Length: 292
Ligand SMILES: Nc1ncnc2c1ncn2[C@@H]1O[C@H](COP(=O)(O)OP(=O)(O)OP(=O)(O)O)[C@@H](O)[C@H]1O
Image 1 (cartoon, helix red, strand yellow):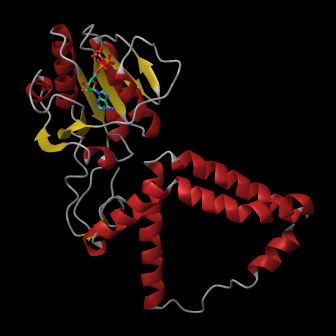
Image 2 (tube, helix red, strand yellow):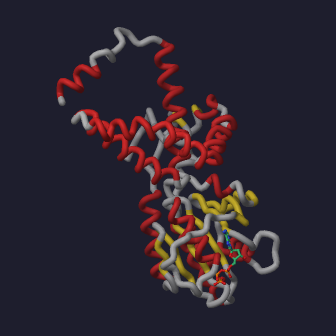
Image 3 (spheres, helix red, strand yellow):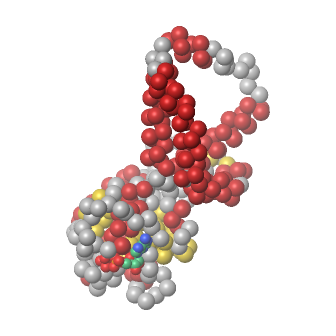
């Protein structure tokens, strides 16, 4: 086993000296790998990639142990399998190439203070979310509020109307008011701001969900299955407030239940205080003044 690793890695010695072009190559590869990972995290392909990774490990083991029949099998179906994956995920692949095309690589590196990224999910935001949810519940106004955690919801934001307003209970209540242009679909919340309304979310196909619950609840659970978001759902029919997280729905919760959950997210969302210094946007890397 050790010999195998040594012989296969012998050809890849470290370069004697690092040149500017090497740094450019590393930055370009990092840029593409970063966007590939972000895309993967936003799609169901993430689970598929984990499966492919396991198959890869299996093939390496088969190679080491010289399991000829298994290797022959993989050798013959491998090409067809890759073609099948490309065809199945053609829409997602096209989207990731489009996203890379939309980005200006130079704009990714900025000298900004990073203040916006570092903004906290404040206690005031929690109070406003709880107040709005239960006030809407009392008058049976349906609502769907998706709170972003670590996985970006940009994909879903694009399906709605941009708002970019400070989150207040009045704003949320106004958005979900019946017969107004923004009331349909979901609102997306990032930090202390409502970023978009009327967003379309993926529906969950979980058969275990209560059949009496309709598409609003299914959409709330759906987004929590494909991202790590936290969704608040207010039922138009019953006025109950529920939340979905990690694909699980917790129905008819109390204000203190919801507040507790939001405080947990707040702790996760809190980022270290940051002083001025250059950083790569999105990667949240700080070179200077890093402080816990
Ligand atoms: N995929 C979706 N993405 C975002 N919002 C959705 C989606 N599907 C449905 N909705 C919202 O849910 C509303 C329909 O809710 P529906 O009555 O079917 O659901 P429900 O779970 O029974 O909720 P309620 O208890 O409020 O009636 C739509 O008007 C729309 O605002």
